[in-house]
Image 1: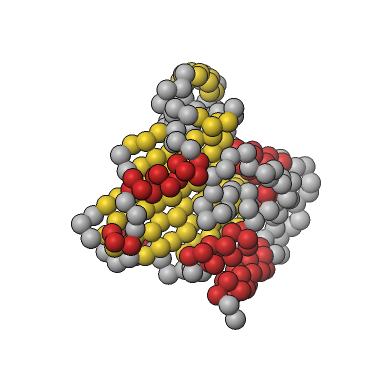
Image 2 (image 1 turned 90 degrees about the horizontal axis):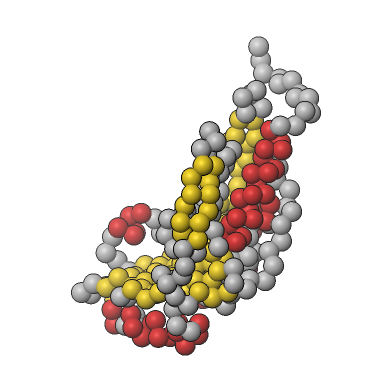
Length: 281
């Protein structure tokens, strides 16, 4: 059996196990979103956000000889009347055998970490992170690596030492990340307080987290004006160096968060009668 086929079968088994566990839960999310082809050229090992989890796992397994396994999380939201929405879903694809001990150690390793959408978006990829730690003689010099990426994607939006960032906004590629004009956005807190924030698209100041967390009121927007960020960084040492890649699609994240929020709130505000429990009283 080939490595890729084995990785695919392992992922299928894990996903089936997840689905079986979810079958005992009361709640579901309906698939309502299908990502359109992404407008930017950036990819990690030829995979872009919006790809299906199985396709991503197979490609990463083939290119890096890694096995990716799902990482599950449990979500429970309860309203003031005691009605609850409970869900278990695969939040990430993580590299089997790589954990905190590996990252904190001094041995070479490689990993892929892909954050997934829920069933609302067919469990598709939202964010990809790739890390490689190898002896220096096995890795290109930082300048050579960035030159290779420039040959593929053009000059970066920002260059900072041994790191570079390519940013894609609502109007396309952002050639100068720090030279953009300032924009303003007004936020309203759950108590009705208004606050005006100045920002440059795809710059810091807003959450870049792709993992879903329920919020009944979302005061701060998710990277307004920014479609995607692709970054590469090299951290060098005397013997080993670490190369990291990150590709995050904020357009997909915003769509995903809005729809999951909507479906959960709709489920919690329904007037449908609640079936009595069968607890031994």
